[in-house]
Image (cartoon, rainbow, N blue to C red; front, side, top):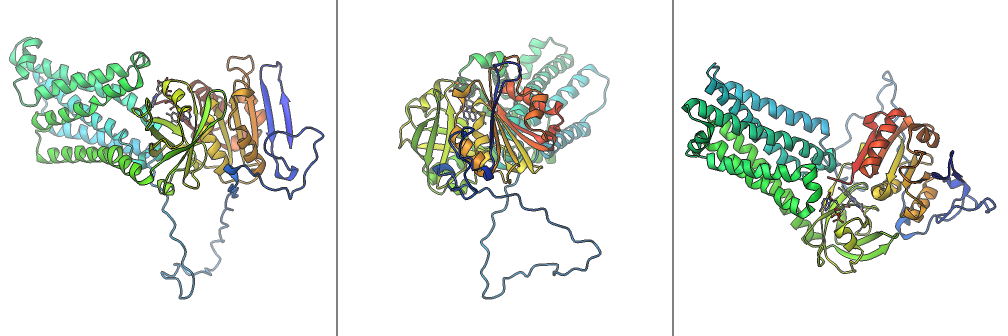
Length: 530
Ligand SMILES: Cc1cc2nc3c(=O)[nH]c(=O)nc-3n(C[C@H](O)[C@H](O)[C@H](O)COP(=O)(O)OP(=O)(O)OC[C@H]3O[C@@H](n4cnc5c(N)ncnc54)[C@H](O)[C@@H]3O)c2cc1C
């Protein structure tokens, strides 16, 4: 066991290093002084209830391949049935399906190419001004309609997408894509107006009035107006000023807008190419609509009825931080993985209106879930006042910051502030032997560290390294600079890195890790903002 306090150059930064090693008998709950007796290897395991069932399984050894020339000694296929008299193995649950960002990106890009192909098939080359406007309106309309569908799909909370791509990345794609979709829809409106004005020889205002007489055009106008309202309220400056609930209420208008746009597409000229295009378009919309209803309505209601989740304990972890422990029925069926989060709706006065995202701060066990929440706004402040017995509607699990992303034996977990919550769950459960896991926990000062006793207990039990990096974020020494990171974790480039913290810290840490030699595809991060 080593326990060192280092102040490189100044007193502003403290790296508190707890290099736990089972062989030196480190006990949870604090670092022993220099004169502390060194217990033997037969020390009892930690007794904290949360890790009494700790399972520090080592990574399975790599299978050793037989040389190609070696004769086969085993039959090619296992017999289908177990021989009589032998016990049958319990069925192993299939691993959850996950769509990677690359695969999803390719599928969506492929869809866009097909849409352009549909336009090309229908386009009639002409040098007339009205025809030029019409064909541009056609292309932007088709791509805009497809874009709306994609935006809805990204937010449909389909598990294979959520667990493979990650909710924060999906939200970023949605925000970026939403801007382009709005631009396409507005461009479609302008091109259609100009085309009609050129065709009829009138001005744009009269063209607008004239166009309203066509089927589906009034629906299109309302859809565009609603989409514009959604876009304006989602702009960064507007969103900062709006309450989350207000922004969300306006955002829900996207569904109305999508339905009106679909009606316009079916009745308007954009899909007039033939029945196949209409059928495919309708099939796509029906599929996305079904996914939305299923995963955003049916599954949450079913989960609420099935699991009957209630608060059992609210534990103070620090000045602004509480842990909420909840118990339900059959929670294993949720198949929640450490590192994931749920959206929690507490059926309590002044909290029931909103579903807040919080990560699991401990693995699911004994039909119990636990979150750890920092009070930073109206709702999170109210969580402290929850009492045992309050019903909870939890939707999830979501998120892709899980063990499946790991590619290396060695893992560095890097947490900032309340970003420790998913890291705490991963620190306990990621498979690995002594020396495989390192947790760096960045905080302003020691009083801001939460779940400390648990972290130290896990480090001790697993032979993992735990370093507290303390000091203000604007101090002269940056503990997350490439050199400082390499000092703390000398074989840093051999690690997968899991990163969770405030957006500024996460960005800076990811950049520093890359500069220190960790490839970008081995830095797995999640942001606590959508
Ligand atoms: C994937 C994820 C996991 C998270 N895990 C944790 C955790 O384990 N512990 C923890 O303390 N915090 C966690 N957070 C952050 C936490 O969700 C926010 O701090 C909390 O929602 C703020 O709510 P508020 O009303 O108290 O604050 P406000 O001041 O009202 O809101 C602050 C900001 O939080 C966001 N926010 C508010 N309400 C919602 C909502 N219903 N849905 C989505 N975002 C919202 C908005 O961006 C808002 O601007 C997580 C966030 C995400 C996205």
